[in-house]
Image (cartoon, rainbow, N blue to C red; front, side, top):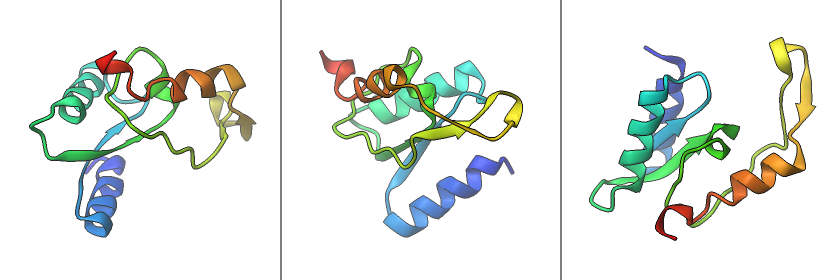
Amino acid sequence: MMPHTFLLQAIEAATGQRTCIVYGALPAETRRHQARLFNDPHSDVNILVASDAIGLGLNFNIRRVIFTSLHKKAFMGRGMQPVPASLIKQIAGRAGRRNR
């Protein structure tokens, strides 16, 4: 079982809501599939858990973006580094972008 599967199961068990996940190490087609599920108005998926990968080319019909951290693993896993303000703005700008 993929590590992110445990996270999805935990969120779904705690909230009772279907959940999608997007992060950079997912294959591109999987990220696109997760975006399609989340954006489909007939889907029962209501929560998207994502890394900063959502700021890089996918558009989502999101009403709210909540950051749990403004730091991420540094290149090659060498400690933590702040997420640049420009990327924070780009990620936050994903809110509602799909239907504009």
